[in-house]
Structure formats: structure tokens, C-alpha cells
Length: 314
Image (tube, rainbow, N blue to C red; front, side, top):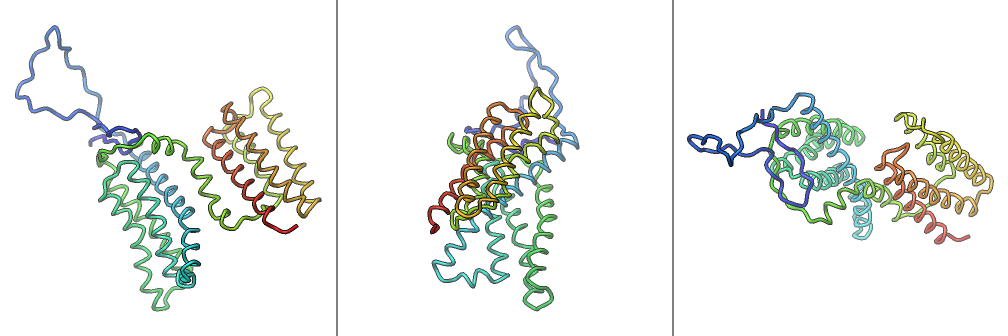
């Protein structure tokens, strides 16, 4: 089985994974100026490697679909309100197809960036729509309700995606050229994901509960325990000190209440961005991608909360 490259991540054309065989009738003997042929590297993929690539591909598709829903969902709401079709978009069958569209857009962008061919993208798009379309008939006849329509569509979507991914897992990538800016933005996907998660909050800004600040130091401790990265000199003490600081800030905000609590919560999230940045530079405790995600998320949420405070009457 040919070991084909599934993904491409450069600004130049995607090269072929191996040189194409020639059609020379008889290769010439090695000379003083030509090196003798060496033993070719094996070209068969191991089952474990093939499974890992398949699971990675499916994981990327899931993230791309979630990103599509997070980014496009609020835009549908705004468009529906502006055009006066909000009630129509809220109907279960319409909402299901809108959700499938959002996931398809995100999946298409992700697959084309990874140099998958258009017919593979089309089949994966069908895996998004067909499950919901199949369930529209029993929904319209009253055999299932709206919850069953949405849940059943998502459950049927999973095996459909797996079948498409398995079908195209050994297919060569299409030639693709990318601009340097596109490649740079793709490498910053943790930051992009963090921004996508705050899109809906910019539409309707609000202040988070003070108790959410406990997640900030708690996440680092849990990841450090799971990765066993708390054993260095002073690492655990630093994390516990951070935990004590944000627990204290949380309790003060809870007791203060009102506008003071709102400012304390916004400050707590913004201050944690500095904590994230320090860990991103040091590379300790958590992966740098997680620290990058947290920096952007903390700053964005703090900005949203400041906007909510300033636009709310005292």
C-alpha cells in the first residue's frame, strides 16, 4: 500500500511523497560521477501509523466543524434578526440544516487547507447533510421530535464521517500553494480558536461569574498533574501561589458584589493573561499551544467584560 501524505503545510506546492518511477528500459551502471543506488526506504505504512493519521484527520475535522458553528452561528442570528426571519431560522428542521451548513463550511476550509481534493470534500459535506435529511421525513410525519432530529443527525454523522475518511485515507494530496500569511495564521490556530469562542459574547457582552476565575489556576494544576510537569524546582509552589491569589480574588469579588465585583472579575481574567504569557515563554507546566490559547481567550473575555461594564448603567 502506498504511503501517501495526507496533509500539506507549506507555502509552496505540495511535493509528491516519493519520486515517480521512470520508464528507462535499462538503467546504466554506476560511474565515477553517479552514486550507486541505495536501498529504497519502505513505502508501506504501518497499521498503527495509518490509524493515527485517520484519528488525527477526524479530530481536525471535528475542530473545524466546531469552529464553523462558533463563527457562523452568531452571524445567522444577526442576519435573521435584521431580515425578520428569526422565527423561520428557529424551526427545528431549518436549524438542523443551518447547523449542517456551518459545520460544512468549517470542514471545507480545513480540508482544503490540508490539500484534500474537492471530491473528498464533497463526500464529507454529504456526511454532514444526509443524516439530517434522512430524519426530516420521520420528523415531518411526527414519528420523532426536534430533540431526536438534532441528536440523531449528529449520531448518524459520526459513522458517515468515518466512512468518508477511511475511503480517502490513502489518497494523494492535491497540489496546493498557500500565501505566507495563510500559513502563519494556520500555525496560530490556538489563538484563532480562542477568538472564535468569544464571537457570540461580542454580540451580547456580559460579565462572567466570579467563580469562573477558579478555572484559571485550576486548569494549570490539573494539566501539570496529568503531564507530570510539577516536579521541577519551585514549580508546584508557584502554581499553588497562583491558586491562592485567584481564590482570594474570587472570594473578594463574591463578597463585594455589584459593579466592584464585575471590575474584579475583568481584572482577574486580564491578569491571568500575564500568567499565561510567562508560561508560554518558559514552556513549563502546560504546552505552549494551551498557553497561547489562554492568553488570547483571557484578553478577549476581559475586553468583553469591560465593554459590558461600560455599557451598563451603574
